Amino acid sequence: MDAGRLDRRITLKRATSTASAFNEPVVTWTTLATVWASVVPVNDGERLRAGETLASKQSRFTVRYSSTVASVDPRDRITFDGRDYDINGVKEVGRRELLEITATARAETP
Image: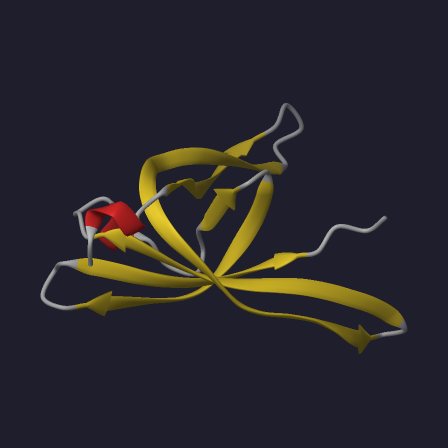
């Protein structure tokens, strides 16, 4: 992939769990890496689930392969353009050249 196509900054985040003062688990998101990526919208849509209308936006993020980025999996999250995306899947493209990450963001409500 041409380096000029990796023109968006995304932040990869990983959940870490700590205990509160009452010994309850508290999940916080820490930055794993901030990398350049290409972003392609895959689809967007609305679904009706349990009487609630859910709107979502699915995108495909392509990033350069690195040992840090290679550890990303569906338990992690992407922050892009002020929105958090839940990772659906990660696929290696080429031999340790690129990673293709498919992720879904819940659309904002008015």
